[in-house]
Amino acid sequence: MLKQVQHDNFIIMFDIKLIRENPEKVQEAAKSKRIAIDVKKILEVDKKYRDVEIVLQKFREKMNAFSKSIKGKPTPEQLQEGKELKEEVQKTENDAKLFKHELDMWLSQIPNLPKDDVKVGRDESENDVIRKFKEPTKFDFTPKDHLALGEALGIIDMTRAAKVSGARFAYLKGDGVLLEFALVQFAFEMLLKEGFIPVLPPVLIKKETMQGLGYMENGGDEDMFHLKDDDFILVGTAEQSLVPMHKDEILRKEDLPRRYVGYSPSFRREAGSYGKDTRGILRVHQFNKVEMVSFVAAGEDDREQDFLLSLEEKFFQALDIPYQLIKMCTGDLGFPAARKYDIEAWMPGQNKYREVTSVSTVTDFQSRRLNMKYQDGTERKYLNVLNGTAFAMSRTPIAILENYQQEDGSVIVPEVLRKYMGKDKISAK
RNA sequence: GGAGGGAUCGCAUAGUGGACUAGUGCGCACGCUUGGAAAGCGUGUAUGACCGCAAGGUUAUCGGGGGUUCGAAUCCCCCUCUCUCCGCCA
Image (cartoon, rainbow, N blue to C red; front, side):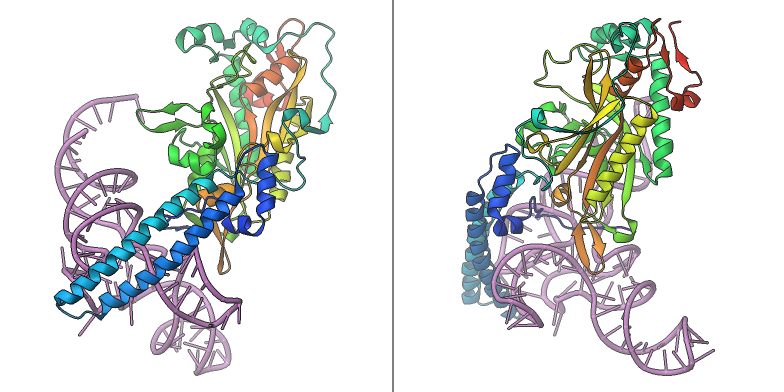
């Protein structure tokens, strides 16, 4: 069984001890992620806070002793002394609170530190290709892109979606739906065998939950849909509602690793991507995704990331789609991640590799912000958390349509999906 | 949306202003007892922060936040979640 933590009024956003002991390391790491923080300033506030805290404890000690010394009705002199003590405490409390808030504010802006093996780099142009699976698909005709194929097959309809919802939306129809369901079933079947717990999570979450995940910082909230009247945010990935499931909980070490597979819509504003990838369903405001999330013991995250990555590769190898594996450099990691790999599938319609999965370890970064621990003997430690894509819908189907297309515009169904789809070919009606 | 109840230690409960240093039962751990076990008996049983080499000490926490008071689990206000009923609803 798990235990519910009752109080969490002081969430430690970032390990202050790490900053005290290795200020340069933290400063450098943030810089390598291209995020500006001022470690010196943080240490100053930390010092002020601790000094006030010590004084405050002394005052409280005095006041507690005094209150306890009164039996029965207090004399007017005692009342007066008590009032004076109280004022001292309240004044110091206010100071402490101010410093605490300031400290929290600074700490919340420190990103997770990249792992040592992650290359320091500016942006995506400095990411490394780790390995490749197969060569780009060859055609003895000119391959079409997924939108041309999808429209002709009657499975993707963006024209009508534009009428109803606007740009970057799509109707998926007919065999397109069956193809998505086939991918879902394929992924779930395999992941259930691996012990993953299937989840259909909420897609509206509270703002404070998103803050706990570390996605609101550094402009991250620009890509989220906010429901301002109701103070909800639409998730950009199931990870965002799967990870905080264990907020304020203490898991048992025996129950680790705890693995979940979620299937949910994902919503993205795609702010700042105007004019980019406007054709087709590569970049849309809403798509479904099968997502993996792991909770593991401290220090187990490297092994778990390899495991999740191996599953992702297995999926795309099973689909027999050419891909390359990318390891992100520090500048392309994002706020919470310590290490990240992307699989980029070959997309003949664009003659390019494009991202289809992403697997990150966030180490204990989100656990600290969300107060998620596990009991290890007499010790309580922060969980390590990982997330990885199984199948992002829109993009995996794109890769299938484009790589499996035939000259007549039909699309062969990948071998492993045939039993779920009940057919081996998608053709125009 | 409306009306009313509730949230206390891992679980169950007691607790209407100072004896609460939060009691009791269960559970758990250790010990005694036993050929071994059960029962019985005894002892212990939170977390965070801060100070300290340590032993230890201080402080905060009874869903969360604020207030009243010399003093709050207890009184007042706000919020969250939950239960019962009414309304609406796939």
